[in-house]
Length: 252
Ligand SMILES: Nc1ncnc2c1ncn2[C@@H]1O[C@H](COP(=O)(O)OP(=O)(O)OP(=O)(O)O)[C@@H](O)[C@H]1O
Image (tube, rainbow, N blue to C red; front, side):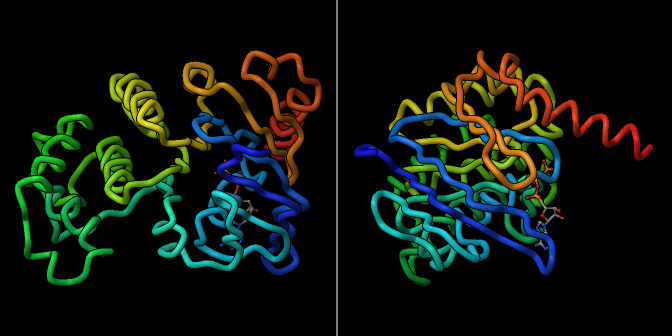
């Protein structure tokens, strides 16, 4: 695909005898907002971990902006412009929200820059805090924020890396409905600024509001690649979710 930002081909991953991903492949074009869906345990987070370099794939190719990133570290991949957020972001106890945001960009610019706070950077951090509705908690320890605020902060930290693409792992899980609404607008604005988004999410309403396309996985493989409006008429997708529910009921 000529305007592909992320191209995944034949990706596989096992943990011991447990094969979690097998021959996974799809690509994402510049500017898309793609939902990555599938029943619990089908391998969505594992795939995000491989894309963002948390751990390496056993086989296959993960190319970002035409460059094969397979085997590169999370930092190397982030420096090339692909960052991710986590399902349960952990935040440091001893740093405030503002200090953390300052440090996020300083990491790539050398230790000395930790002590420099120029006006343009402060203005950028103020703008981010404002945009993410976190201004009122800027002087609080990052670890003391609510679950939803931590999710917003992890998006702010991702933005500090000046990314071309962000992978989000369940951005709305445990988030208050008011904040959820704010997050839809926020992610739309982030996307409108030219950043491609891949979003792992169980909230179908959120997916329908935000995504133009969905990639659906089941038991470690891609089973559908379609518009959100086509999900309920896709037999394989319906069976994957129903089958999973039946399995849970049978095991209860
Ligand atoms: N680091 C790991 N070590 C061992 N097994 C793992 C590891 N990470 C994931 N797994 C296993 O991989 C499988 C897929 O897990 P994964 O978290 O990728 O699924 P998921 O689709 O994101 O699920 P959910 O929607 O519940 O978050 C599970 O069986 C899980 O136990």
